[in-house]
Amino acid sequence: MKKLLLKIGINGVALWVTTLVVSGVTIQVDPGAPDATKQKVLTVLVVAVIFAAVNTLVKPLVQIATFGIFLLTLGLITFVVNALMLGLTSKICEHYHVRFHVDGFTSALLGALVISVVSIALHAMLPDDVKR
Image 1 (tube, rainbow, N blue to C red):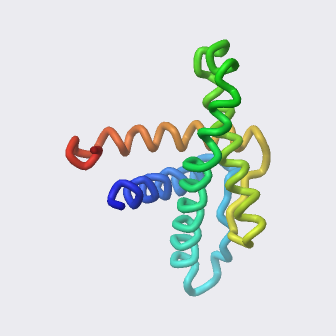
Image 2: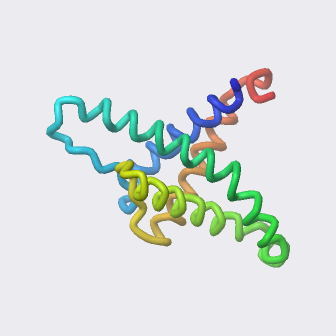
């Protein structure tokens, strides 16, 4: 349970940083609303849960299906798979009226790259006993 909450927290921070860095990845909250910050934080948490679920349930199946391409590209297809998972997260959020949107494949690819870098950096800062 602790690892799951940690994963969701790291995903949340990585997604938030991505919305700040990549212009095509947005959280659509009315900035004039009195509780805009609260809405943004709750939206990031909901998106992080959806993103964690997509990465846990769908990503392994896609990785198995693309194993041959993975070998041919020496692992670079991973960025494309991550971009597809981010795009799928956006579509699921759209279906459930969560205000998270990814504009297109280029934004998803850049977003996946930022999420990977931020996640790696945050995991590197954790003590070894927390990582287990």
